[in-house]
Structures are given as structure tokens and as C-alpha cells.
Length: 208
Ligand SMILES: [Zn+2]
Ligand SMILES: [Zn+2]
Picture 1 (cartoon, rainbow, N blue to C red):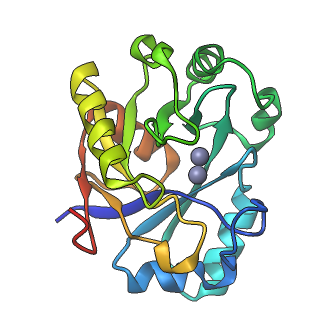
Picture 2: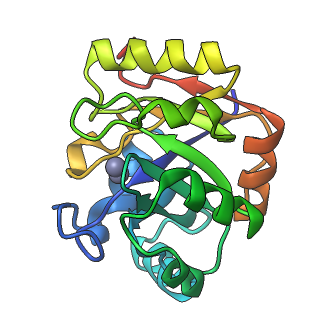
Picture 3: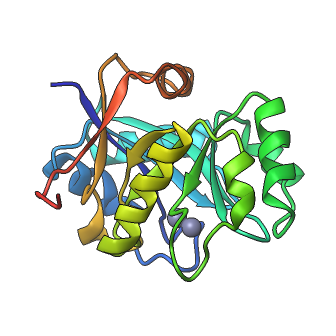
């Protein structure tokens, strides 16, 4: 058994579309069996000070709380892991996905295509040529047929798959997670694992 991380979720502190009270988040994650979380707000990355304070307030010393951010391009959303909070300003919303993916990777980030087959905000055919490190193939925001399409896309492209909650409500935290097979103590550890493929999708609540 590796470490279970939910690597895509939003809190109300920095994502207006989320109703998750961040002060309840870590307790909920621990109860869901998670070892860590990666907050991915829309166009905001939590600072190390914010992350440390939330863990301290939760009382769960040792819980691993990391942050990336979710970039909304003109066609599809991208989870970006491993930049500094201030670098989010370099990612103006609504630009071409392939351009911003290239920029993020050139800056050293690991990038995952968020809900790539979600009917409301899909990528277009450009995704076939975009060198994502992985594709998100399950979340509470992908319908079952969209999940199957996303898995097929990952298979066709030879890309690894992650599963994450994309939670905007507390009860969805941990609905899906990714199991990491190596120790994850830092964003650098997470990046290495995502690059090396030392992880696998994991369904906590038996959602297939
Ligand atoms: Zn999204
Ligand atoms: Zn999201």
C-alpha cells in the first residue's frame, strides 16, 4: 500500500466556485484515508506559509499538504505542479493550451490534463500533440462515459492516468485518489513520481 493523495481540489478561500471550508479539509481527508492533498485552486497557488498554517491548525502534524494550480486555457484546463506561487501571474487565463503547457513545462512544471473529456470544457484535437505528463481520467466532474473516454484517450496517447476528486464540496474529498508508490514529502517528490510513473489510480469509495 502506497500513499494516497488527492491531487486536484479547490477550497472556498481561493476558488469562488468551491464551498469547501479549508479549516475542515484536512480532518475530512484523514477520515477518507488520505495521506496528503494537493490544492489546485483556479489561478492561485497557496503559499508555503498558508499550507503550513493550515496543517498546524488541523492538529494533524505530518499530514502532507502541497499546492499547484489549475490553469484555464481557451480550450481545456491544465493542472500545473511545481511552480512558485508568484509564477502563477505568468499564466494569463484563456490563452492557447499548447502554448501554456509548453511554457509551464519549460519553467519546470509537471502538467496534467484536467478532466480532458468533460463535455462542458473539453480539449480539442490539439491534445493529441500535447506532451502532458499524465491525464486525469476520473473525478466527480467526469461522467462515467467521460471517464471511459478519458481512459481511452490516455491509452491511445500512451500517457499515464491519475484519478482525483476535483472536489468543490467537502463530501467529495477523496472520492478518487492516486496511490503513490514512493515517499511523497514535497512537491519535488510528487513531480518525480509523476514523471517516473511510480503511481497508480486508486478508488477509495469503490467508484470503479
Ligand atoms: Zn477544471
Ligand atoms: Zn478543478
